[in-house]
Length: 559
Image 1 (cartoon, one colour):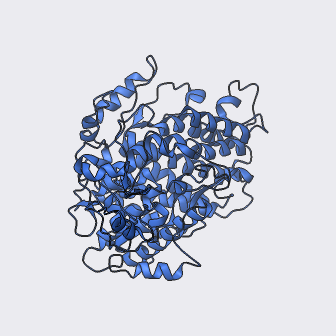
Image 2 (image 1 turned 30 degrees about the vertical axis):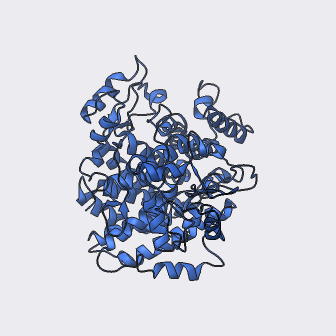
Image 3 (image 1 turned 90 degrees about the vertical axis):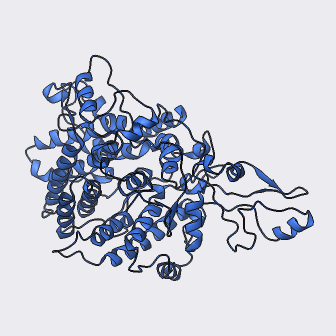
């Protein structure tokens, strides 16, 4: 994994080598030397930083841990290594410093009002990464963070998670109000706005969608805040992300964060829960997410010829026999789990894989020898936003204001957007796609499937499961979803979660700062949250929960 880190550093260095005024940490070592920072370059560095560390995160966290815990996939179980939680380092080393400097510098300019949108966008981008960081760590330095150069504050206090959420909701609301003002002669970031190309309306939509992310996290702690924030978002002139163009997407043609490390330590497979549901609904995302096994063509004739019988879990008459999953926790069905890494001897020279892999090119377009596949990383999507809205309306939180559609309307928008966005990712990756032509017929058929369309009985569960399926490429959101809702449910007649034996950590252990630095505030925050400092055991991390998670159901115990 050192290779990934080095590549990330080289990529960032190459991107900004044309200017000597790039990273805040470099340009401000001596204020007497550099007095006019390059605002566009500072922003570009932070924009790159929320993405370019994710190769490490994908390999050590998402594919090996979080998506296994959510049962989107399965793989060999490994301990939470010291390589997890790179999001924390990136927030404080690469994202926040430059954003805070942009605010400080532009606020002191004679024409400071022309930079108001620039400053507003820095809050939205910073909160995007900071929310992801608190999701696994809880209390963080924020209100006093990044002030050492300006005030001499070397030991910032840790804000608790409630204070963080409240602060971010206020900052996002102010950013939305600012971005919604008449444009005038606002100065932008030029080409350094890698995501929205200075489209301030899209930045405001992203801010509203981040408010929804916070609102659903707030629900088990204080549902009235959830209701208030939902109303604010839906009555905002900008509204949340509701178009394909306003999705928060990273698109760099040569970006290759995972590569062949997608198989690092162990290959990944589909669980029987997700494979079976995708099969049962003829979901177009099935070939996008997973690869088929080797039971092709006249495999039955081969079995007859050599007098072979497939294992009992395979129905040879299943029209979708090529799609097979297995236990999420291998200890619950060790016999079937052996087929993850073994091939079936069908006689002669026939050695068949019975359980396929995840679709590696969907995650790593330049996997193997491919040199042209392109990675599209959608970090906040229209589908995610639509499912939040559908969920909140279905729970009765949308009364007294215009929700711009019913729960079913927003659900359908979310499903369609998910199908189309996942297909777009697959097209760019030169991978297996799920839609053909304009996709309209397949989308309509899927929405009309009995296990997909609203039925007036378990509509909330249907929203939840489609939300869950959409998070296949957003591991942090998938894990947060499963924590806060307890879905997929054990023993559900609709979408049953696989049996599971091992403890699941619900957070990361936040490392103690270097001795002699901010140890006192770190220890105070750990104790206030009820955490055992420096305890990395899975049972402790499973039992000692974050603030937003304290009242959440256990995994699989959704109601």
